[in-house]
Structures are given as structure tokens and as C-alpha cells.
Length: 119
Image 1: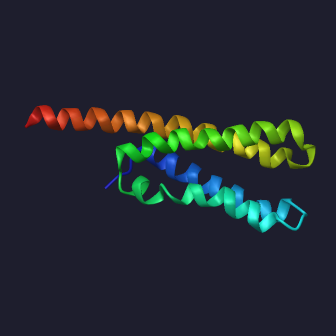
Image 2 (image 1 turned 90 degrees about the horizontal axis):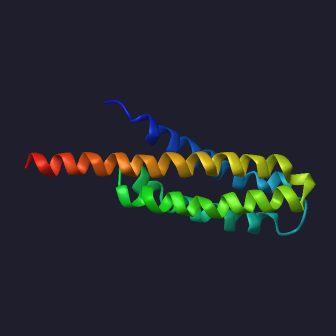
């Protein structure tokens, strides 16, 4: 059983994005670093079940969820020079996740339509 490359890219990028958000614990040096890391990590945990079970709707809204992390990365890259590696990872991973999840949901739609026509 092989996994579609777009699904694999989506899964790897969301897991890496979760790791990037939890890595804020080590990058930040204030009293709220655990809270900030937790708040940013929890929304990314919500779609994992649907992504692993190939739910087309989950791939659609995950793509739009990542735009929040893209905007966080862009704002941090300008606002906080100490977090430029974090910001660059956010921009890169959320961009990859957005593109792969949207195109994989389109692929799943084509597959569903083909199965529907076959019936």
C-alpha cells in the first residue's frame, strides 16, 4: 500500500509545523513560553485524525488553517529579529502544507467523482 506523495508531504509538514511551535519553548525566554507554545500547537493537533484517514474536507480546511501560521511567520520575521529562524520555518512549512493539502483535496475530489461515475 503506497501513500500519495501530496498526502505524505502534508503529513510531514504538519508534524514539522507542530514541532516548530513546540520548539518555541526553547527559543523564547519569557515566563509565558509554555503557554504561547501550547496555544500555537493545539490547533494543529485538531486535523491530524482527518488527515491520516484521508478526509477531503479536513485537507481543505487545514490548508486555510495554515494561513494563520504563515501570517505569524511573516509578522515575526519583521517584528522580532531574534526569531528569524522560527519565522522562516513557519513561512516555509505553512506554505508547503497549504499547497500540498489544497492540491491533495482536489486529487481526492477527482477520485471521488471517478468512483461516482463508475457506479
